[in-house]
Structure formats: structure tokens, C-alpha cells
Amino acid sequence: MNPAIFMHIQKTAGTAIVQLARNHYGYPNSSSHGDHFYHLNELTLENNFFQNRELVSRYEKLGFISGHFGFDFCRRFMNDRYSFTFLRDPKERVLSYYYFCQGRDPDEFFEYGLSQRVPLETFLRMGLSDSAVRIRIWNNQAWALAHGNWAYTPRKIDSLSPMDLLNLALDHLDHFSYVGLAENFQADRDVILTELGIPVPQDNLYINANPERPSVKDHPESTRELLAALTELDQVVYDAVRVRNAQSSAQ
Image (cartoon, rainbow, N blue to C red; front, side, top):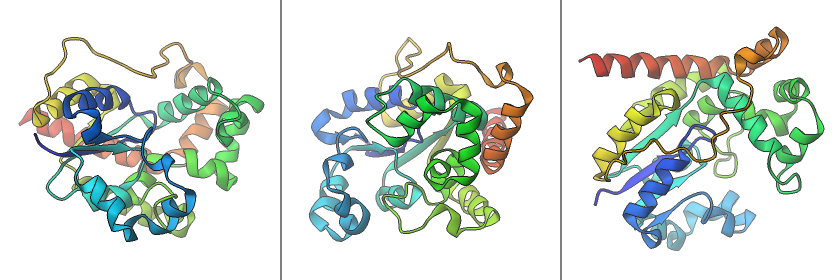
């Protein structure tokens, strides 16, 4: 059974793959964002995880690791593993995140409550200036690929110039065995499952999907401009993967 690691960027259609993989590897031999790091205390998360050999060894032995971590965390476990991630149309991903937050318990996380208190455009403007919102929606896919989740790295998103962040994200794409696109989910999912020896399901299973939410085209120009400003780097990375995958398929 091939060991694997999935860098699961939020709202990129990856939850269905996590479920299939965990069924295949077995729950004791797999771990996802819902049942590992949040069980550890905040100090361990931020300062001591990779110094704690017992914790690191526990994850090194797992067949399948997934979570909303970024590249800084992922690369520690990529050796001798099949590694993959998914990207999504950047503007649609931000919208999906906002509407997802609106349907959650407002007391669970800051962004859940905020999305239910302020309209979409206010939320988006805050993503350009408010650090607590910015880390969640400003070029979030490029940041995940460059370094990632602030709980596992001393680096902060504003410690890099946009160009440095973009260059790191593009460079790190080559470290993954496969980078899929949410818009091509079924075909890319099937490639990944086949590589891992997981039976490919007949049905196209989506989890946490919200097909009834408004899309980018349903919003006014002012909203689309804010979405574009929030995702300039993400768009470059997404387009690079789209071109690369198309060229690979054509060969």
C-alpha cells in the first residue's frame, strides 16, 4: 500500500478524496485535519511539533496524511510518499469559502461569525487590509504552496514580497507527484486514486459542496474587482497548473 500525503487547501473539492483514502488505508493508519492537530495544544502546534520526535514518528508511520496544512509542514513527510494537492478557480474558491462560513456555527471560529455579521464586499475588503481575514483569503492557494498554515511555520504571509511568494509557490508545484484542479475533479481524482491503488468509484462524489450558492458571474462588477485583487497570485499559479496539465494530457 503506497503511503501518501494530501495538502488539502480549503474549498478545493478534496474532502471526497480524504474519505475514500481513509476507507482504503484504514482509520488507524490515516489522519486528517479533523482528528489530529486540533487535539494538540496550541503551544505544541506553533513551537514544538517537529522537535517532538514521538509526535513526528507517529505521523511518519501513517499510510495516509491529509490536512489544511501548507507546504512547510507537508514537505517534512513527502519523502517516499505520493504527494498531491488540488487547486481551484481562485475567485470561486474565495466565494465558496465565504458562503461555507455563513452556514457554520458563528461561535466556532472567528471567520464563521464575521461572515454572518458583514456583507460579502465588506468581508472581501477586510481581506485586503485586516490581517486576521487576509491570512484566510488573500492569495490563499499561493501562500499554502509557498509556506502555508501560520500554525506550523514562523513565517508570516506579509514577510514575503508578492513576487517572492509567487516564485516559491510555482517552484514548489514540482515537488508534488500530482496537482489536480477542482474544475477537472473527477478525471484528476481518478488519476490519483489509480496511482494509490484505490478502487475508482463509479459515481462522482462531492462532500461539503454548495452548488446553489451564487458564482462569480452572479455578482456585480465591484465584487468581481475585489475578488480579482485578492487572488492575483493565485490566478497565476492556477493558470500555470491548468496549462501544464493540459499539455500533459495531450502527450
